Image 1: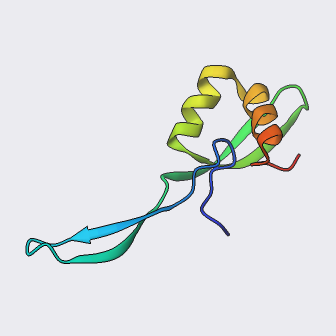
Image 2: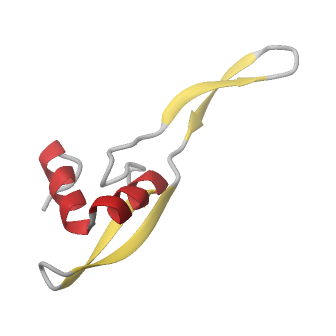
Length: 79
């Protein structure tokens, strides 16, 4: 299961751990993901989505139907 937001398309980023002596080792910054169940009124069904915190804010702001439509257009979601 990949750690990608189905609404915004956010993925893990790669960066460095920097120690006190300024040594650098690779690390991964994971996305703040949640598996949430949403009720889709237009289709009269429940939808399970893997959503980041930013994706939750997007759904609250523009609505579930518009967010799913935008995500499908950008290729983040297969509906």
